Image (cartoon, rainbow, N blue to C red; front, side, top):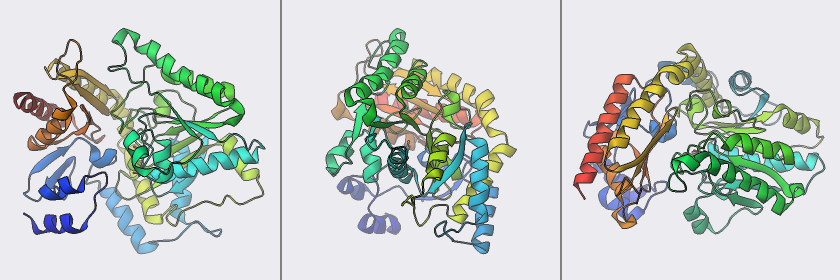
Length: 447
Ligand SMILES: *Cc1c(COP(=O)(O)O)cnc(C)c1O
């Protein structure tokens, strides 16, 4: 065993891991990366169809990002935005973000991560309603199976049952409704009907709680970690109508969907959502450095600006200058390559076409995609979509066979998901799909 893997097993706790199981076999050691490929300690090349954790949108070797970090490190490696200070990268990035995010979002609160964005959102929403003299508007409605991060607030907003059960210390005044998951919940014909029904659960929840008690609704435009749940077209317009009708703030958690993932700069553009707050992280720096931010709509920003009290919130690394410099370089490189247009018009349609071919495979009950996220549902019987017995852990098996075939594809139960870098080429999509098919074959043969 690589001695560093042994050291890792002895001293390093990994996120979301079963320690006895992981340490028995040792973690996979990734030593370097190039383009869309990562390389392990045996020098094996693996196509990273997950963009790290949904973040290396511009790939692993984007020179302008590396240069921006180096130069900023030399000039001003750290300063903060507390105590009436700022610095050029924060000022420039906030202006650039106002430009690329949806219309009406012109202010940003910087954080260090997606989880911190969602902590910020809880505090900001309550501060806003207090300032408007509606202190009772406190409850935030979220969705089951949502992922909003791993801090106490993020886990509370999220709808991941194992996370709720484990911590036992959940933020009050958060309520969850169902997600618009069509696979297994309804037939293809009933898709739009289910979308409406799931959206209307929001209205029922508001009526039950009383609209004077509800502060906001938070959702990922496409649920990511929950298994790439792509909403029916009927879903978001109905959510928007309900939020408008009852004066509920709409929070779009675009930590995954932002920065080109869905073929627009933001999924709020893709689905015509008008968020009051919009959370960003991951792709904002293509993952090169940790950074997050909450975009704030003009109407909310005006209220925050008009209070005569202090918003008692912020992080040591809110608007870290090196992270901001990398985000600026990332956005400018995306613009220079016109990557969002390229994804929308060329790469995402190609991925959709090739991915759909996997639906022919005997193990696959559904192959779906939107922009640069996609999923496969593994089933025992294609005609009835009957799942395999859970104890077989068919998704985890398939994930391991993917690695053997030179592909990172993630398993969420028996749902296989990908979110490849936006810079992936058509030839690389062919390679991705052929490796996925090989892993599906191996999985089937192993049964
Ligand atoms: C990853 C993720 C988060 C949490 O971001 P961290 O940077 O890991 O704290 C929040 N929301 C969504 C939708 C995510 O995918």
